Image (cartoon, rainbow, N blue to C red; front, side, top):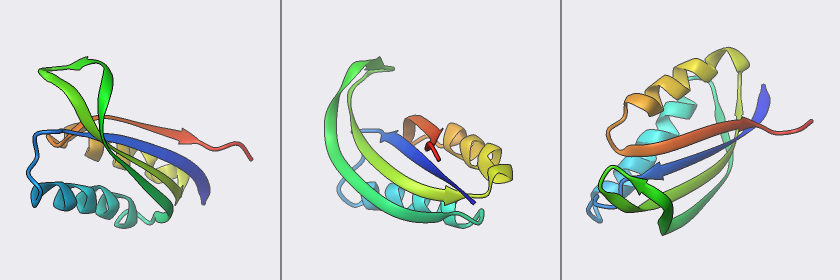
Length: 95
């Protein structure tokens, strides 16, 4: 397992009940594919550097995760098709 940093920007128009559910779906996406969440930091709603669609803000979730390298494509494709996720980036941490 390698260490990665996962940054996810979630739509700002989700309700108070929907946001925790969306965050849990991101967590499950990682753990169901053999990953482990080491550390998680919710930044909350922040202004985007540039508009994405009609959105000027997004809810940020930054996580340190351990993943098997062969599962990276599965996780990224799951994040890509999620309607709740505006953007994501998964970066391998330096050894």
